[in-house]
Image (cartoon, rainbow, N blue to C red; front, side, top):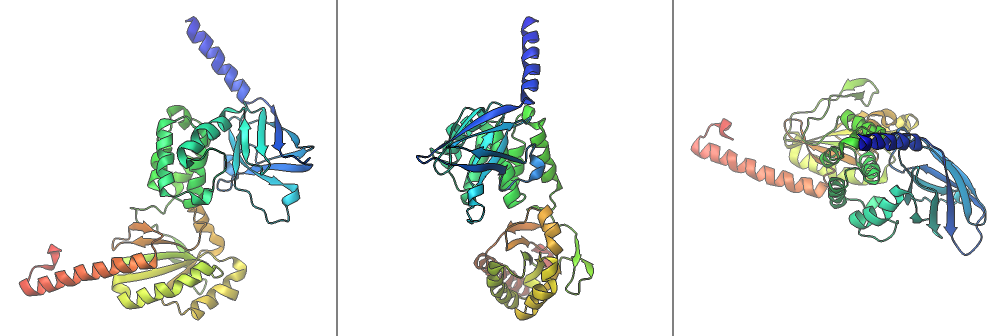
Length: 368
């Protein structure tokens, strides 16, 4: 009974502590004296809804800074310096602050060197070596791929109470959109984590996603080229490619001729394409409608004005495409033209073989 009472007391103390304001003492390991202002900003691929403290700012005097912090759960931040505002410098290195963080040190490049906060300690000593195979807090988020997604999933299974892993899962989802491995990863967290606010926010966002591989492409209403709202209908074809693009996206424009070639070669029965542009309002007449004519795009085009639908679906990278089968189900994301060409050729050969077999032996069509 006494043991239960002590545990209850410690639990309640931890709740009070989690709301306490702590002062974080920071140090920049540089030889020269640095006088600047440092801002801890929300993570690159997360968003305001995940943050209790969206921005923390402090003055740096002779390489030292102090800031006050309070949050019921750890926060992941990236850094910005006042002196770099107009330099075009864009930092993607991150660090964590929680209510056990009282000392935090960055090297001369503002990469996390050490911290007494439990979340940063996990990040430096366990997470980085496990997932990135690095010894320091520096990594490139843009190099995160499917293999690293699998490592993240494994890490969560081994560390189901990890806020570090949860923040990285938030980043991956907000960068890439829905992925089955993200859903599996989310549900691999402990019961304790599933009761936390941060987990619940991500769970809600994942649940709201409509575009999912192995599911039918959702029914949506967008504007057609005449700017009249219209239901996006998936045509009857063996394959349909849904291409998200916008008129000033150079990689999108470079890819269009390749899609046109495949569209013309395999016809609308074998391949159909639907274009969905995310152009801003001011670019609709000036660029989008003209690009369709200039590029001689033969397929149906729709407008997701100001990327309202795309943003909800976490489509932030362009071009992004989804390949649908004859049932309207999404079977691939971001297939390359060369890959689709091979798929169409192989599919054509199989169909040609069965057509020949049917004619020769008069086998009922329903058999295949």
